[in-house]
Image (cartoon, rainbow, N blue to C red):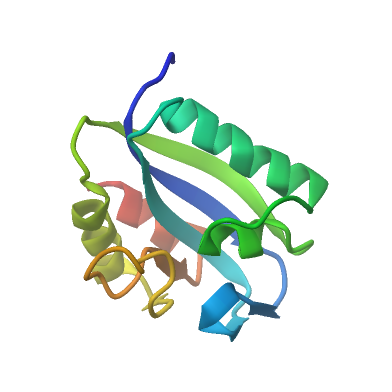
Length: 137
């Protein structure tokens, strides 16, 4: 995967209810369960570079905070379970996010969507089964 560009779905598990400060969004209450974050990496380094950064934040639980998702990844109660990649030269993350939003229990308002018109790019699923069903689109 050399400089593959496109969008991705970052699958996360939060092991207990948590209140997390997320930059300008302030403190947000997150329920225990599964989350799907939709992002894109169309620049230099592509998806491999972006996901590598997220994995480092997730393992070390510290690092430079750049995006909303970074605030979650440095929380000790969250872990990355999987990543799904959608190769594309165009920005398709909003279309993908809308699909997940329709199937989610809840979407976290304005999370990861400050540069678009979407309600959110982070979606909550109460169970692993519900998230897996959403992935089958």
